Length: 249
Image (tube, rainbow, N blue to C red; front, side, top):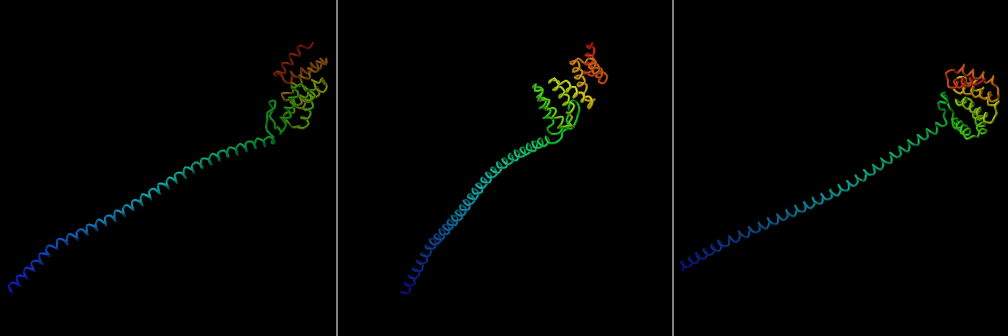
């Protein structure tokens, strides 16, 4: 019986050992699946993290791109505004230049100007040229009475004008046209006396001679013509005087 019991114990021990042997591989396989599962979970976590990071990076890039576009638009707008301001500045500078040029021109009208009249240079006061031209236009229009009055007014108003000899000469012509021979002769004599070197002086003498001839004063006319030839020899007026002398009998 003891022997049988011993055998039973050995059989039980062998059976237990077999069960243990069979159970060991099953436990080891279960442990490997958990590790793989965990690895997969870890990989998914890392993948999700990288995906989130990539999405965040993409959003950042999109935001930066949008900002760059906005900055580009702002730069383009500023360039346009700068061009507008540059054009406006150029226009304002031109307007300012034109304004000062016009102002300078207006102010010069109120300042004495150097001017050459009948070959003689002198200082012309504001208004002189306009007044002289107005009187001359009256003469050209045949308004001899009006011209005479205007020339007299000019002579009185601008005594130092370089137009004086010319104005007096044309006053004499206006009086002559009005058949005021005495008055015209007196005016022309004033030109010769006061401005003997002026280009109008020999012309005034020739006008006096013509005036004298028309009044039948041949001796006086001859004397006047001879004065022209003596004082202004070589001039065109002297040649005309010499021609008239040869015609006087």
